[in-house]
Structures are given as C-alpha cells and as structure tokens.
Length: 393
Image (cartoon, rainbow, N blue to C red; front, side):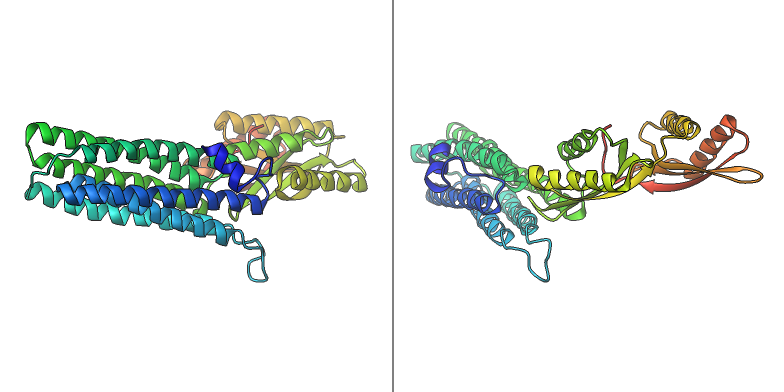
C-alpha cells in the first residue's frame, strides 16, 4: 500500500533530497494521517458515546489529536518549503521543527484533559454496554495504526524527517493504548466492574502525556541547537581526511536551519610549506564536494601547519598525548613555538567538550608541568576552547 501511494502521488525514482519532492512526501504523509485519524476518531467516538465507554472516548480524542498533529505537520512541510528571502536568507525549513513543537503541545493538552475525565470516571464509575461493534472498531483501529506507523516510518526514512519519525512512534504508542482499551472493554464485560473503564482511561491519558513529553524533548532539541548527528560528523570527517594533503581538522561547527538546510564551518590543516594557490585550490574542492555530494554548505578555514620542523612535530604529538592521558575527550590544535632570550613560548588551543566539569585551572597546571618536564625552558600559553561536535578521528 505504501509503495502504491508513493507511485500514485509522488512518482518513481524521484530525488527525495530535492526540496520540492521532499515537500510532496511530507504532504502525502500528512494527508494520509489526517484521513486515517479522522476515520478512527469518528468510529471510536460513536462507539464510546453509544455504549458509555470513557476509555474508548479517550482513545477517540487521542486519534483526533493525531489528526490535528497531521494538519500541523502538513502545514509545517508546506511553509518549510518556502524559498529563502531577504529577511530569511537561510530559508524557512525550521517551520517543520516548529510544527513538531506545536504537535507536542497539542498532545500534552489533550492528554491532561483526558486524565481529568478518566479520574472523574474512577470516582463516579458507570457500567458500559458491551458490543461486538465496539470490539470490531478497536481491532480495526489497531490494524490501521500499525500500518500508519510503518507508512510514516517508511516516508521518514526516505526524506530523513524527525517529525515523521515522531509521528510513526506516536502511531506505535496508539497501538499500545488501543490494545489496553480493548482489554478493558473485554474485562468490564466479563466482570461487570465499572471502574475498570475509568482506570484504563486514566492509564491511556497518562501514556499520552508521557509520550508527549518525550516528543516535546525531541522537538525542542534542534531549536536549542543540539550536537550534530554522528553520521553527519563521520561524513564530514571522512571526506576531509580523504584528501592526501590534509593533515587534520578542528573547530567543526554545524548550524541547523531545518531539514536539508544545514551549514558548517571547519578549520582544515595543511602543510605551511605548501604553495598558497594549491592550498586554496584544495579548500575550494572540499567545499564544492560537500555542496554537490552532500547538499551541505561548508566554509573551510585554512590552518597552516609547520611540517619541516621536526622539533615542533614531536612536541605537538607529546602535548596531544598528555591531554589525552588526562581526559580522552581533550584535543589540541594550532601548536607553535616562539623562542625568546630566556624562555620559549609554546602556544596552542586546548579543546574541551561542552559538558566538561573538571577544574580547568588544575588541567592547565597539569599540562604546563608536563611541558616543562619535556623542556624546562618551555612555557605554555594555552587558550581554552569548547567543541561543538563530537569529532571521530
């Protein structure tokens, strides 16, 4: 069914990384979600109202919230596809993140209301009427949600959408909650214990709230500026180091302006003895390769590294080993030495992870002492920096 819908509304062999095609996938997922969830809401609400089940009614409103979520997601994809303009040169793709945030708020609001209604049904229980129609509606709902979850996950994989992955996870959670409601319906029919309906409605509401908080965290992370994806960092690392002339890189920063709208900057180390025109040509090629092969706009800064001075090279390796022994997450770059009449300054940048909690003054003292052990005339001039990406080398 998923393949058929893609062929009918998207077409075969179209590039999912193209902004227009990606938007079409998002619109398809949103439209299918709206239709399925409104269908499920109508069936469950009818059954819950006719046969007096608060649990089924609660699950119906959960589906209604999912339909609203699909509408918001659909709007997010549409607005996010707008081209850059004078006020927004980085585009509008973050609308998709804002849509995901709005969806999470809706889920939490409905979950809290359902919790209130469920608790009221526990305090004032009413025995519902058993019906095979209700059982049939719930079973169909579970099957539809199973398919919808797989459908959204398939589309999410094609266009790399965290919003649709969250939607797929929500469909999976709905299967669990509807199964719980089905169980409550059957137990109530066989035991005549009316309070089971209220208890299960409360459990469903709590599950909706719990899922909403999890999805809310996922929606907020890219807006706050989360660490770039490990796979992206690996791609950047491998591509830069694939150039034979490159000695290393550092200060990688990735800025996320929405799906398909990422920008990066990085310092690439090349031999200082290399011709400047050749170095510039290599940097141009690196930037061009990222843009054409990965759709990633990268600005590369050239860092010249002295390779002809063996003494500097050995010192660089020694200091790098010293900081690694202190903490494996630490790195250095831009090490150089400046001789003077009484001592020699060893100047370098020391990079700390963003969550570094240890005493920084103690770290600096340790490194300085180790460098003096190497040569008592050396004096460290250390600049502390924070890393913005987990770089795998």
